[in-house]
Length: 233
Length: 146
Image 1: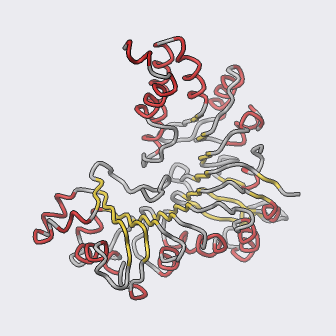
Image 2 (image 1 turned 45 degrees about the horizontal axis):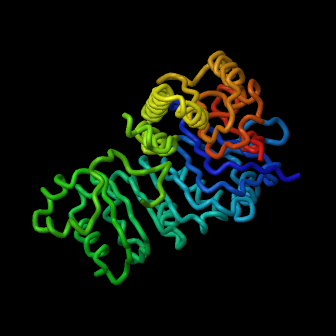
Image 3 (image 1 turned 45 degrees about the vertical axis):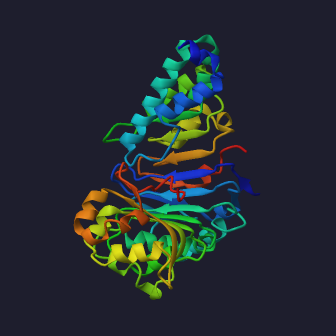
């Protein structure tokens, strides 16, 4: 029997600083969400498989999860899923990459939220998907300098959304962004770059680029990057 | 104000709902901000419904579009609170809800009110469907009617 629901958006939230366990069981392969277009995983979401025997979550059993999630998160069961938002550490991102691999190629709007401290391999594999047209990144730490260096660049996006504080510490990134958005970077194409934060703060660090900063769009009124509702606008 | 009455009520409602924050805009980062947005929206729509008789029914429909069950800053909504809200939903014959946020046990809510009233639901935000151990079973999500 195929179970089907008309939900268009599903948002799983962190549970009061506790871990929120999203539980799968073998019968989930018969669940269809044909209208689901957006899913977000907040912080501290873990993916677990319910044992068929005792029903207890078994967090380590990735091998048991894969056959379920690969069928559940598939173009057949979720043909309209194009928005994905995920926040947390590398481990969660890695699980998303493995468990949702069958739908990742249809994701057009991807938001990677606060919490990730370095752009590890899973990050690159997800954020550089060919299907992604709009990307929102809020990464802490020293990873921003590597944004354009991985895989020799090769970004092809309609829009890239970044937080202002990511730029403050990276002297080389702003000139690179300006070059790219002006179409002067032969390796990358990004039609629109949007920065969330104070333009004045950036200007104070890049006095020789003040006029060039007009090539970037600024959202000074928003404290945070879009996450759950990210659609590239 | 006389000019406002000459406008189509649907247009005025649209302006009011946007001013109060559309149902889940997602622009807020924290659950507290999101809940405040919901309360603001409700206050605006309730005030709107009192201004003119022709606006009342429109506002009521808009109010029913979103159900938000909030716990507290430190803990999710207790079952007793969910029971009370469920009674209100049933008594008010709420229908046409598109947006549902539950900071409590989703299954408790569904046990109280049933799944049929959520036939138009398109947006679901939750932090647990089951017990107090913050688990969500995918199979619980499949129970929403088509």
